[in-house]
Every structure is written in structure tokens, then in C-alpha cells.
Amino acid sequence: MTRKDEESALRSGKSRSMNGPASGVEIRPVSGRRDLRAFLRLPWRIYEEDSQWVPPLLSEVAKVLDRSKHPFHAHAEVEYYLARRNGKVVGRVAASVNHRFNDFHHTRIGNFGFFECVDDVEVAGALLHAAESWSRGHGMKALQGPYNFSTNDELCSPGVLVEGFDHPPVLMMGHTPPYYAALMEACGFAKAKDLLSYWLEAEAPPERLLEGVARLRSRAKVLLRPLNLKDLGGDIRRIKEVYHSAWERNWGFVPMTDAELDHMASSIKPVLDPRFCVIAEVEGDPVGFALQLADLNQAFARMNGRLLPLGWLKFLLYKRKIDQARVLTLGIKPGYRRKGLDTMLILHLFRESLGAGYPRGECGWILEDNMPMRRGLERIGGRVYKVYRVYERPIRGSG
Image (cartoon, rainbow, N blue to C red):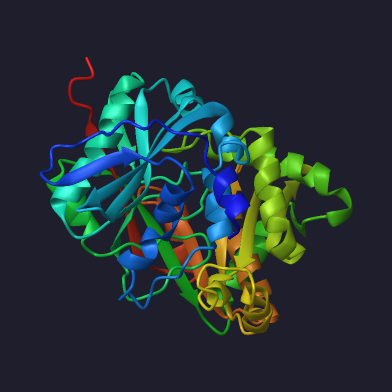
């Protein structure tokens, strides 16, 4: 990551100190290049002894934090904080207000994210106190997280990992130390929602399922087709239509702006295989879609967060050895649910994956109470292997 990247990733912040309730812990907003570097590099200390952690690409994290580059900031306010004890950085957090989310849900919820902390409840309490105070000052009544920054952005998955520490995270999914849940609870946070990840691994899908899906497909006159790169703009519009219709009532959902959709499309286009972006149509009308990507984390794990000077060479070398994938998203319009379309889409990706050399992979994240999706995955042999938890607590003194 270049000095220019670091400088552009941050607007000038406040210089005042904000001390939390913890003795000896100093909380200050990130201000300047040095603070930003400390914010970005802290995870290398937190996960130094964790063999399952996959370092994020520093340049990508910097882009997300950059208020001038990432489209999230067009409808949100954000502040970044560092925690120090005796001059040493021991924690970080981002406090944010997503106005688009609050307007859509008629709520006043502040969020915290990019949370990293040593195993010390005083440090965690001071960081979350800073996020709470900042959110209260912006009129919020509850604090929820962690998010980086919303359920749309997926720099890594929302929540704290509470099950599944013995497996490395797949692409765009999170990994946190086992003690984070205890820190959250010690700071007065309670569970808001669990998010599940399913693991699929098999040489072939069950024959009975193949026969059942074939009957459903014929009866419903469903066409499953890959993304059309010659009409990419048109297909992106169709996917956006399905996305907003399919997730509108889901917990945590917020409609994506055109800028956010374009940003996400441009981010994944270089690694997108059209076979794994599938659109379901009924009489030409898009009614569902699913998106899968190769698990690039298998290559990123070798790069230590850097593309330069040798990161690209390592990426190209290890990319050829990737043997698993992640289903990022799958959605169906309300009028076409409970007709087997979810199973059709999952089965389609499953079969294509086997042909492409991905005999295993993850489907996630999935809301714990999304039983139709969970049953569909379990019918083809999926099992829950990771659980992430989003926490919430009322903001004290918010009025």
C-alpha cells in the first residue's frame, strides 16, 4: 500500500481526545497517515498466533475507509477510533450512521465495525463507549454491529464468529478471535441475529434430488442461464431488480444505490466466471439469481495483505490451486418462493462447481430464521459449520 493510498483513505479527523470509562485507555479519532497505518495494521498483531486468519488486502481496506472513493460514504457518516494504552495501539473501531438504512427501516440505529481488540474488556469497553457516544451525538438510540460497513458491502461478513474457529474464512467472510463474543457480552451487548454458513462437499448431488429438480423445472418452465457478458449492463439491472425484491423484508437489508451496485460489479468482474452468476427466468421475466466466486482467500492467504511487489506473482501462482468456492448470494422474488427455485439454483451451481474443479465450498451467510433456504441446503447435504453473531445494545442517555 502506497503513502498516497493511505493519505487519500482518510479525511482530516478531529484532534480531541475521547477517553472512555477504562483506566489507562486513551481513545482518539484517527487523524493523519500514521494513525491510519496503525488502524490498518492492527489485525496483524491481533491474529499473530492465529493460523486460520487470512490477511485482507490492505489496499482494498483503505478504499473502503476512504470517504472519497467508496459509495457507502455518500449516504453515511463515519468516524474511526484507535485505542492506546501506554502509547501502544491495542484496539480500533469505526462508528457509523447509515442514513439510507435508517430511512428504509424507520429506525435510529448506529453501527460499529472494523472492530479489533486485545483480550481486555476495559479496552473493548472504551472503544464501544466511543462508538456509542459518537452515535448518540448523531441522534441514534441503539448501537449494532460489527458491520464493515453494511450487509451489502461485505468487506468481510457482519458479526463476531461464535462457532467454526477451526476453519479459515472463505472469500469476503470474517474471522475473529474466540474471545470477542465474551467481550461483547461483558460490555452489555446482546444477540441481535445469528448468521450461518453452510459447507457443501460431495462428488455428486443425490440422484433423487436431480430427478425432483428436473420435474420442478419442467413444470414451472424455469430457464436457468449464465450471466450474459454481451449484455452485462442489462443483466446487472435485472439482478438489481431481483435483489431488491427478494431481500426487501429481510433483517438487515438496505437497498443498494446504483453507485454501490456498480462498485460491487466492478470489484468482482475481474474474477467473475459467468457460469457461476446464474439468472432464473420464467417466460423471460427474471425471478431469481445466484452468485458464486472461487475462494480467492486460498491465494490471498499467501500474500500477507500486499499486492506489491510480489503479491501479484503469488496470487497468479496460487490461484491455479484453488479448489473451493463460495456462494455469495441467492435470491428469489416473493411470488416465486417455495416452488423449489432455491434448490434449482443451488444444485445448478453445485454441478457447475464439480465440473470446474471445485468439489466443495461455502454457502453463506444465511439468516438463522431463513428456514426455506436452510432446508434447501440441507436437502443437498449442506451442514452449518460457522456461526456469526451481530450484537446490539440500547444507547444510554439517548432520550
